Image 1 (cartoon, protein in one colour):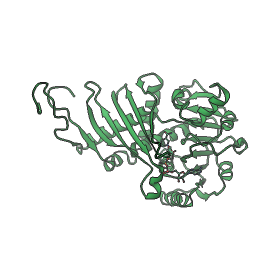
Image 2 (cartoon, rainbow, N blue to C red; image 1 turned 135 degrees about the horizontal axis):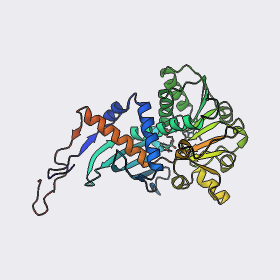
Image 3 (spheres, protein in one colour; image 1 turned 45 degrees about the horizontal axis):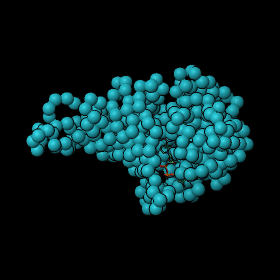
Length: 347
Ligand SMILES: NC(=O)c1ccc[n+]([C@@H]2O[C@H](COP(=O)([O-])OP(=O)(O)OC[C@H]3O[C@@H](n4cnc5c(N)ncnc54)[C@H](O)[C@@H]3O)[C@@H](O)[C@H]2O)c1
């Protein structure tokens, strides 16, 4: 984007995002893998997320995730994502988001994308990637358990299936019977061959699963007994605050980024506060992919991904390129207007 014309600015709707990503689970999982490797190699800038909280609405938050990514993508940007858990009872999703992409050379924003789908997609791709890498040294799990069954759980199941996973048993547990039933309905309509069981008892779900996916909205640990994990499952701890530190201390722990994860009262943060050290962390998923860390089979494994802005950028740029290629990019005419230094109006 150089030259003297007004830089273009496009808006990409959720419908366009979904169209660009539908059925691309394997490509997006590879893209997320490449992005983790790029981040691990230092070719990114990913400062800590900023949490905006409100005294009058304590359950709500809006998080800013600024990031910059190098490599072939070369794009900067910001994800701005709200979490308002009470939305669900009102019939709309908890999370809503936009992603702004900024041009590498001029800094100009060049696109605003609906980003709740991008966020759920990169989260699910990261979970599917971790499920693959963290189970390589053990029998491939045939029993999966979903602990918390909202939108993120649905995306993770879709990404596991899209990456070739199939399960004999699918366990489901949620505090809300309606959510568990809704997720069961989704599973049945997805054509899964596995037997679906709704567990009212959390312990039974965990003891019946070799791959456990946490996607609740718990603010503090509610699973506290390490003996529930004595069968050494692989745990995708996507919601970050479900597990008591004692469970992490009895497990092999992987994160996406150490500095990010040891913040905001996540379970790894609590484990660090309890022990006064980071020794309970084995490393990052990138360490595992690069062979720097080996995952032992004889212990539970817990992956706690904080969620990196670089992943949103990578998936957002993928969507932008796809929509551009399809010829459906909606550019907003005259979005940038004050372009001549000493004369009002457009160039
Ligand atoms: N780590 C990441 O990168 C990342 C990215 C996106 C979302 N998330 C997290 O994923 C989680 C799920 O998001 P969502 O959009 O699916 O939310 P959602 O509101 O759609 O679903 C959450 C479900 O969890 C259930 N639940 C809450 N507490 C529970 C408990 N203690 N036990 C069992 N079930 C419980 C709720 O009833 C609900 O059905 C959120 O915590 C969100 O912050 C993490």
